[in-house]
Amino acid sequence: MSNVAKPRNPEDDWKIWLVVNPATWLMPIFYALLVLAIAVHAVVFSVGLGWQ
Amino acid sequence: MASLSGLTDQQAKEFHEQFKTTYTAFVGLAALAHLFVIAANPWW
Image (cartoon, rainbow over all chains, first blue to last red; front, side):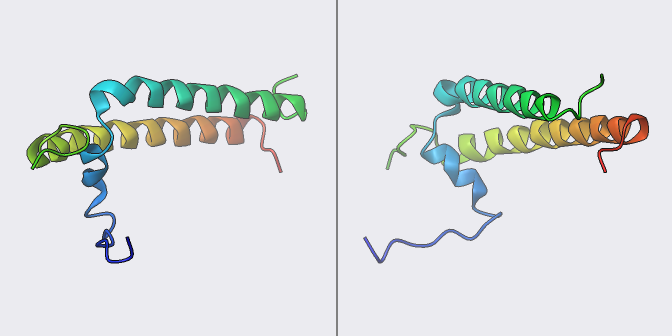
């Protein structure tokens, strides 16, 4: 396992799609982003930084 | 040799271009939203 070629990023970033199929995972990625955004907004409002 | 995802190198590169474009637009919109919040109610 140790002689696996290390990627050079960002030029090799595109290779992620050789592992993760966007036809399957693009929407789950978007939903995870939505959950994260809702969580961040919830925290920001809960600490009183939202509009009162 | 098929990839783990089943995409060819060409398809992966093509999709990544669109992914970068969409992600850049998302970051731009988020930055704009943050500027509006800073203008209206800076958090520092």
